[in-house]
Length: 192
Image 1 (cartoon, one colour):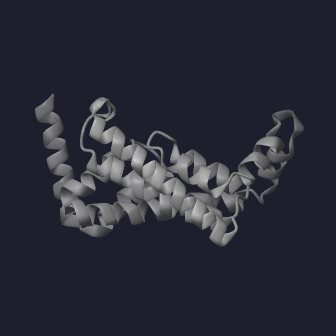
Image 2 (cartoon, rainbow, N blue to C red; image 1 turned 60 degrees about the horizontal axis):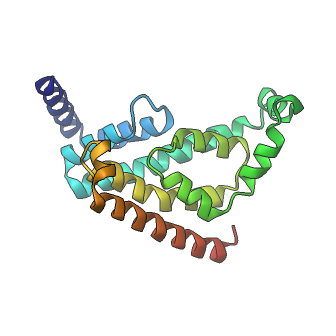
């Protein structure tokens, strides 16, 4: 089984290397919109194929653009009649949820978006459908995706090991605190 996995990883990284950075960008971009496999897979493959620095940068930029594309698609879909009808239907009680999401602070949105097991695609969709202010969404993903890509790309351990290793837990907590502080500062500066 391990040999089969190694062969798949080797063939995939060779494919990525032959296609270059655009292919590495594309797999993360598409994964950010249509989550077929966990985001960790294309990010890890980029790091293996292109090295830690280039793989991180490609994955980070692709994740941001993928999240933004997904957000914008649903932002404009929210204006269509069928979606408006669903969102305004009192039976679904979406109104209170929509208001809660619209009024979420930048710092909370950033922390939620940076947690590795939060379904990012769902955040993008809900943020778009509820017309979360673009500025708030963009600042949130720019800050939060640094940690997310770092976590999935550089941890390099199984999920179980990641949460039993004190260094990993400490790093995660420190990053969450730093991003919370940064988002609070940006929240005050940009008044979002």
